[in-house]
Structure formats: C-alpha cells, structure tokens
Image 1 (spheres, rainbow, N blue to C red):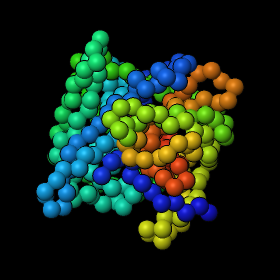
Image 2 (cartoon, rainbow, N blue to C red; image 1 turned 180 degrees about the vertical axis):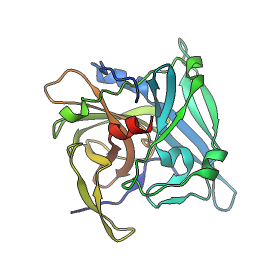
Image 3 (cartoon, helix red, strand yellow; image 1 turned 60 degrees about the vertical axis):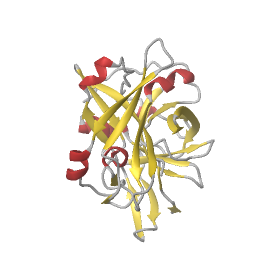
Image 4 (tube, rainbow, N blue to C red; image 1 turned 90 degrees about the horizontal axis):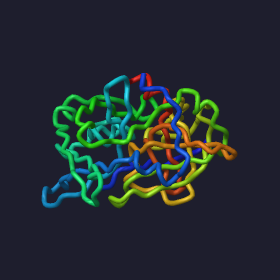
Length: 255
C-alpha cells in the first residue's frame, strides 16, 4: 500500500466524438488559466490562487469543467471549506489574432456559500457549470470519447497542460495505474486506508507543482498516433510526481 502526501494543485452526457488530436503541441489550446486573489489570515496581503479549466459541449450547450477544490474553495483533501478564499475567480481567454487576452470574472460567492462535499476519493473532485459566454471567446472544446479510456494501456503516454506560472506548461508522463483498476493507499491525515475507484494515477517526468488543478489529461498508447481525453487532474503527489486523475465516466455522469 502506498502512502501519499497530497498537494492541492492550486498556488498559495457530453458530445461523444473522437478527439482527433495528433500533435502534442496543439493540446495546450484546450487549457485555460484560472486565477484569483486570496487574502492572508492577517488581511495584509493577497496570494494568488492559480489553476486550470477547460470546456466540453453537450448538444448546443457549452460547460466549463475544472476541479471542485479550485472553483469552490472546498478542500477535497480535508473535506472542509477553506475559510479564506477569493470571491471572484478569473478565466483568461486569448484574443484571436492578437497576443492580448481577456480576464473574464466569475463570481463564486454563492457557490462557496452553498458548497458541501467529501474527500476526493469519496466523490469526484469535479466542478461543472454552464458557460454561455463561451460563444464570445471562441473556446476550444474537449470531446470525450467514451471508449478511448477503456483501451488505455498501462504505461500509456500522458500529457497535462496547466498553469504553474501563468503561461501554459506541459508535463509528459505515463499511466501508472490502469483507469479501470481500483487503487489502494493510505490517507495519513485521517489515518485511514483508502480504496479509490474514482481516480487513477499518472506519473510525470517533471516536477508536479501548483497550477495544474482542473487541467484536462490527454492519453495515447505507445503505438498510437491519436490523443484522447483521459480525465481531469485532481490532486498531486509532489515528492513522487504523481497526479490523481478523475476518470472521464464521472464527468459524463455529472453532465
């Protein structure tokens, strides 16, 4: 049984279609920077909360998808509200044909007030909301292939684009536990053994740090040429460079 130290990766039925993503460098267009200003306990300073979101589509409707702990202030590692958390989060959209961008505000005060939940291994660390404003920003849509994840092999290649430093930065890695398997580990904060059927693990070739929460994960088998959507980044294990990834089936169930 593995013992993990969990890191919140923030700094302090969809349309079913093949995701024809052939070049790894094009995958960054699906990740969008999320940030807000979080007050310190003494109220003297502001710390930046940072993470990632992306967009999916069901019928004519577009939905924003991210990690619950990023978009609501609910700690899915501790199963409690974070007392100090921004009232407004911003989503950064690039301006087409320009190097500029627009920071779109999302008021999360009502979301924070009403949020409830549990640990990330008891319920999916997912946040989904309709986003009709997507039409104003020409967003890139992630398509969910219901069969692709089932065909993922152990040691399949993974790519995650997140925002540890505002600009998109990718981490390439490998599937460490098959998405269909249960993973067992120790939650040392609760002194409890966990049998997790919600998440699977990928091991990254670079440093796991804040800013990747809510990012889409893309997978492809060693001999494949096509990338497929493989889930949503939830938690990170920095010392061992693992990501916990929410399986796509839970995204489908919530839409």
